[in-house]
Amino acid sequence: MDEVYTLLENVLNIEFIRAILSNPRVKDGIQKVKVRPMEMKGQLCFQLESFTKTQAFHENGEPAQVLSRIMEYLKEFRQMQIETVREDISVLISKKGKITVKRKKKVSEIKAPELSHNRKKRYILEEGKPVPFLIDLGVMTREGRIVHSRMDKFRQINRFLEFIEDILPQLDRDRELTVIDFGCGKSYLTFAMYYYLHELRGYNINITGLDLKEEVIRHCNELTVKYGYKKLRFLAGDIADYDGADRVDMVVTLHACDTATDFALAKAIGWGAKVILSVPCCQHELNGQISNRDLAPIMDYGLLKERFAALVTDGLRAKYLESEGYETQVLEFIDMEHTPKNILLRAVKYRERNEKAKKEIEKCKEILNIDPTLGRLLSDNTDRVETERNSKKGENN
Image (tube, rainbow, N blue to C red; front, side, top):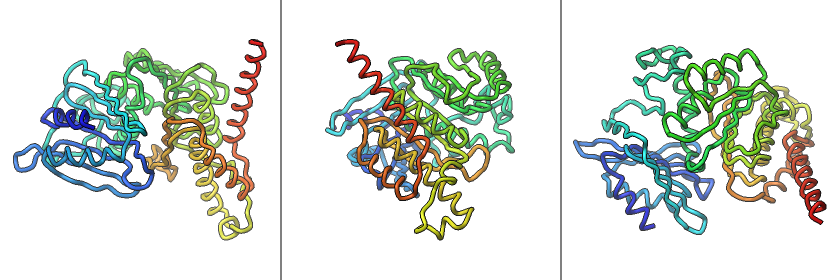
């Protein structure tokens, strides 16, 4: 780890902006650590903010102290993303301890952060810097001030971008990346993704938004021309029928209703997408299937059964992703429509299929007498791949 220690010695200075340690080796305990510079008694210091699933903890210290703490934390994490005024740095640590460091110079230097201990919360999309799509949404004035009545939406958009910020080390900066947004709706998050990844972070990105509403899609395409977003496009169509890509790096599906989420997840898994972000909505399917008399205290009451079925639906979706080799987190998401539907599934592909997760799924299905759409879709995908593989073998023979 000497290379990482030297790296941190060189970057923990006045040009340091932030660092994020993520992808924990153990699911229980600390899930993420954020590092930011601050000023205490006129001296440059740093704050470490560590997060469990339910709590956040803060530590402040001078550069040498914080460097030691980061090195301790790195024993428990597989990646660290560092941003300075001049460059972005990714540190990846394999299971066997192999360290890979990737550095990318910024096209132009950015302003060093404000170090005041009492500074305002830092947002990815900063107040005071006009953003075209936020102005059209009525979230910002033309001078970049946040409209008071739209502050909730401003926070929600930034919260979504924080989820993306955490997975940046998983995205390859050396080639064009393809992102699909299923069920994009009015697309303010799609525009936010493009602006953040392409305009702010300099990724070579190609984003496609898909939705059934043709009028909304037409309006979104007009806005892409207005903003000059050449690699952002919107298509009208159904998730289940979409076949416009052979390789996809990230799939986003926010509030796709009921089993539309399952079709989006199945597509993402079939492509082998590196990252999947999903906020499910309206989980009706299993409510009509689920049956277990031992759970009568829940099943005999419609409201409780509905909520239980929704949790089972999303729990199984997360477990199906794990079974397909994704490291999956179930996170709290501030919903755009201010409803209780605030679960976000974030999955990162990291290995081959997980047989243990498959067995857990089958046991759950048996106990609750259910047959989820996602399971059937994945089974169909497996059968199709196997048929194609056998067909190719036959041709070669």
